[in-house]
Length: 202
Image (cartoon, rainbow, N blue to C red; front, side, top):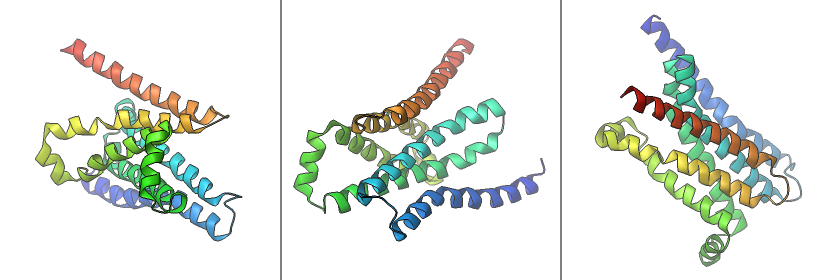
């Protein structure tokens, strides 16, 4: 493909994907504006932002398998954006809990995180995401070298913690956690299979 044409397509595609990633937030703001968040608006906002956090996290993990299976290497150019949006929605998810649920009551928050396992793993996932977001720039990639890749492998245990956070929070309907867990299991299985092939080639 002509490199100039490829660059033009990228200049068009990236803003479109960026806008698409913001649509869940726009949708939630629209529901809030119209008063359609249900009987418990805080719970609705918390659940929806949590759902989108997991979706963007799994989309980020899907990029590499999709690139290898399709041969479309340009997919890799969108991985960083999707990862940062995963962190963005996780941040919103935590902010809703911090502001609207606990009203900045730090002793209550600490006690809650320690007492409830689903909050413990969720908070751990959020903390682990912070260094990944900070080191997502190209400058940090160059500075860290191979350590950058080792650090960003944390995204896999983070995704596991995210699914556990969701599963332990749900009381009755486990269809959502099972769906996300199944997708994550396939992605982890593909990664292990790819590593096995790599060892065989060596």
